[in-house]
Amino acid sequence: MRKLLQFLYEFRALFTFLILEVVAFVFIVNYNRYHSAVFFNSSSQFAGELYEAKDGMVSYWKLGDENDSLALENAKLKKAYYTLLKEVYRDSLEGKLRKKLYEEMMDSLENEPRSFDVLSAKVVKNSVRLSHNFLTINKGKRDGVRKGMGVMNSVGVVGRVHAVSDHFSSITSLLHTRLLISSKMGKDGVLCTTKWDGEDPQFAQVLYVPSHVRVEKGDLAVTSGYDGIFPADTPIGKVEDYKVDLNSGFYEIRLKLANDFHKVHYVEVVRSVHKAEMDSIEQISL
Image 1: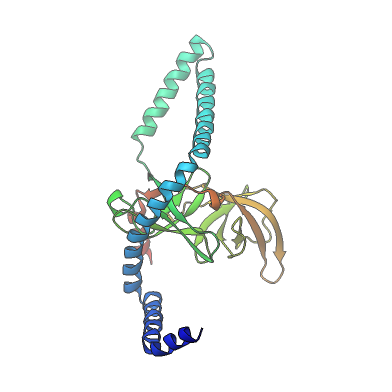
Image 2: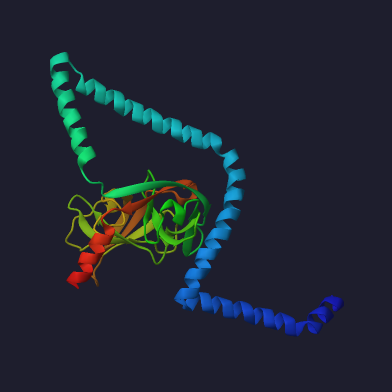
């Protein structure tokens, strides 16, 4: 113990210098936009490669669960497919008419301009226990990912792209106290905002729902689609409980999130085809 204290005393100037360097670095990254962006882009690339190697080993032991999930998904799709066939070809005469209508519908869908492009990605890092949680995915700038894009999966909303390197991207999780999701809720589709309060990773808050609106337990909160980030009606969660704040005239709503963020392994990055056009016309309107 005496030798340790002597060692620390002899090199006190060096240790003081290193501590001050770390403090200065933290201040620069947190309070300078340019240096913050450079740091996040560089760290996303390095951390992404590191976590991808780690995730490769961990994923091996989870293949059984993933295969079960895929098998269940395929079973549901097959059931829906055969149900559709049964409806379309109920009898020969009606079947021919339905087939014609079905083909016309599919042709119209193919010719209709797409609103969103979707890119699948694998999560190589995920945090849920912080107040500002992030995910890292194995797709980046070279794959077409850009800052601000929405991220979701088959269950619902996951987050938004925060920073991008060539091969990886950092995602601001829905479990981030500064992320706001444009939402609508209930049968009337009243506009509102979903925000995580930093407490339980299974629950979030729904803000700005007026007290005159009818709210019931189990009501579904979905994306509004008005911000051009997520497709409309993407699930966010269901109302767990609620009460009226008499001072503000709004509800205090506790939302059970659709996603269990402990189990988010694959996501889809969504790009609005018309987002740039929407932004430009909105700027003209200001």
